Image (spheres, rainbow, N blue to C red):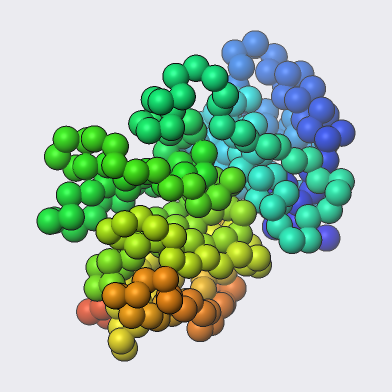
Length: 280
């Protein structure tokens, strides 16, 4: 059976094999592999589960800066993303290789807690003019709010122990949707940034979001890491944000790989998604 994500197939023994294969393939000692070296190195380790074409696609996914080569840092960062999602999945097996990403301890706690994220920023959301707020979502599992004029830090909200993968803003109701790779969606009040809703235990890790308002309620489009696109409705009195009700309207498997972008186009009344499998 071919796994949909690399994290589904990897255990600790395989990771050790991968590291050894990486170092052996790096014959010039430059610290990175091109696509042919990558396939030659990793095919023998994951060959039972991945074809040459899938290994080439995996190479493109891991090559974060698109320079045509993969170094060990890019590779291990990808492994962290995949296995963090797998470890938080309800059906994750005990044999999966799992990583924990705790927040740094010690040092300048005032700065780390009130200013800089402790992990890479994955998403940035600028709220509409007049609100003067910019929202950042990070691999440290937090959402942080900044004043767009002074760039002063306004608030930090922890939404998950896993990476934040998406942000979207509902302008009509002044709500913010946040996706995390632990297969969850969180909802925040756009003014107070207080949590007002949470959905966990999704079938896959959500990667991208698109939000709009239609037929009297907020709509949220979600693309995930198995190629599915889901449509949610969020309803509730904006004066009583704590009473937010969120339910899924439908979920369709539209792609064969990660969904990288979802959008709703009002003029076309169309939902559009794009994927790493090369389809739209």
